[in-house]
Length: 424
Image (cartoon, rainbow, N blue to C red; front, side, top):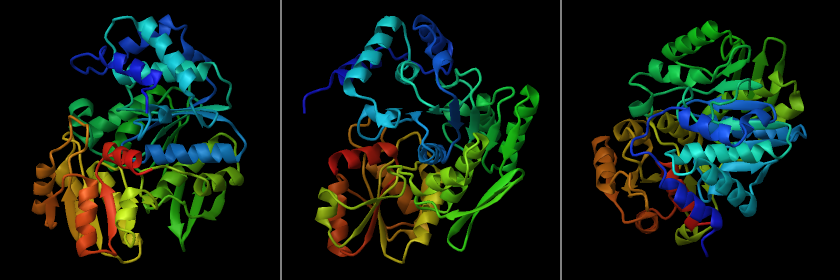
């Protein structure tokens, strides 16, 4: 396939990246000002931060809004297959001509000044959103919150913080409390913040920040709750009790994510129909996604294939819970991780459930953890592990010894993107 114009512009943008990433909003404010401050011309914004579940929660909010016949722009990261996935205009992926147009405009306005890839592409998304009408705009934080490039909206409609756990310590802090402080940076005076269940330390930090700036909170366990009851979702807040279908996204954690999304929808004045759409109409690739076609599936037709991009210890815990909920089947893992992750912490929750693990390096990623190191961590966790050249080779090996296996490809969204790109 010939290279897209947007790919060429994105490649140029990489050359502007500072040698050292220093989290600051100065570069973003500078570029926004040169473009006429598009962030002030957006539909009502729902701003979502958190360590785990923010993508699934945002996807449920979107499904609920669209179920209520509301239109919405959506900004998420990273993409899995094509950059266009990051920007949705009124529910549709941004077109190639319009993406190239806004990227070009941002590149020209920035000139040769340093700016990170995420910062300049976030500005491009905001510019695109500012020129197309919609009822709402959903923004997912990229890293942290306080100094994230998305944190330029003076008064969002709602802010959201999903569960906070230990991740990106080199940027966000060495404790969950410090990381929670960065996430709480998206809270705004007078704007309701919907807060999913947190650890005691994280909740204390978030509430202290809210008190300091005057941000009212709706906290899970205090003002609302959501839980599984006989295979359905029960949601309750201070005014009502809802009995809803279970989320179509797999895993016990999705009941909490659904509750967070429903609280947002109710804060926006939407009713039970929107809540039901949030859990029944949602789609979110690479989060316990069942793979049913493609070369990998063809190579082991009797096997059951799953794909998950969760990449930290907390994600591994929710992954383990999801596996336990599935019917009994011998589970073999194909795993690739980035070298910035806590590989031992990732292995611990899933070790008791894995019959074997085939470690792979993530193709085309300079920051991949070498397959040998992933294998070493798996062996240390008590998993029968070996390395494989790639996912296809791993599938062949697994199919030879366990043709009816459950095969789970996991460890990184970057690996998930490779799988989806090569096996669509």
